[in-house]
Each structure stands twice: as structure tokens, then as C-alpha cells.
Length: 151
Image (cartoon, rainbow, N blue to C red):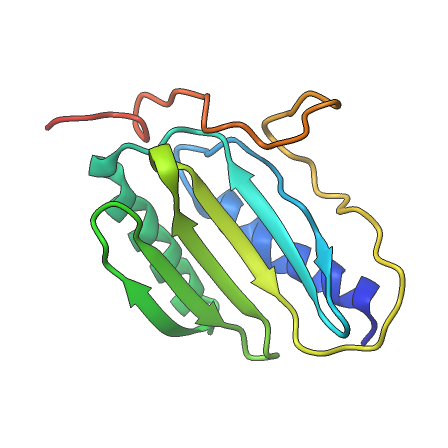
């Protein structure tokens, strides 16, 4: 497998989990980075996820990854910045972590593969960034469910 094939496999890991989450989260592409023999592909959730809903999100992702045959390697139950890490059967590392202001970050890290050029993902983002944006903004999309606070 070369880096391009590994990046495409990363998209095949990221896209289904985001499609599984209901109500839908809006997301944008994060940077794809290339190491000496590996690739990291990212999705940045632009829907604001309230502190009260973070456990819901991690639960949905945990169940989906387990059902998909992934091995959960770490669960960080931090109240403010929880995260879940898993590994696919073919050695890809996958994670979801919650950052500042409830912004969720999905990432896949590939195993070591043959060097090659890596094209941008062809997956269709559901939130869009200004073409001249230098930084990905904090989550700026409200969801009646995901952004809800209180009981």
C-alpha cells in the first residue's frame, strides 16, 4: 500500500462514522499531513457540542467502532476534553477528541506505507471554510441537539 491508498483508506474509516452520527454533525476537512512513511487525515467538527452532549457523541462513536471490529485502545473520560482512541484490524489508528469550546476532532493515522504523492480527500465536507482561511475557526454551527445545555 502506498500513501495515497492509505489516505483513501483513512477516508473510508472517517466517512462512515460521521454518517452514523444523528443528528448530523457538520464538519470540514482538517489538514492532511505526511510523515516519512505515514499519513494523517483529519475531520474537524464545526457543530458546537455542549459539555452535556460530549458523552453522547463519544458513546455513539465507541459503539460504532466496536461494531466495526475496531479495538478500543484508550478512553479518556476527562470532563472537559474527553477522547477515545481505537485501532482498525489493518493497523490504522483512529481517534476522536474534544477540544476547546466543544470542537470535536477525528483523526486517522496510517501504518507505515510506501512513499507516494497524496491528493486531497474527495469526501464532501458538510461545513465549509472560507478558501482564504488560514486557521480552522472554533465550532460555529448550532444544533438543537448537540449544542443543547441543561436538562
